[in-house]
Length: 68
Image (cartoon, rainbow, N blue to C red; front, top):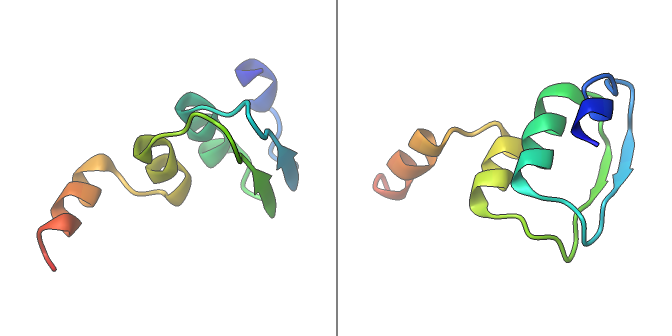
């Protein structure tokens, strides 16, 4: 799956309900620049995967917790 996504820059919709993981989000965050719809409901995704998707590093997320 990850290998196929490396050449999927034109994808606009991905439906991976119940099947996505952090490494999947890491791949699509760097490759699928035209993505408009993503369904990862009921998947095993942690904050780390969401940080990848949002383009936020773990260091940035930790530092923002303490600046409130």
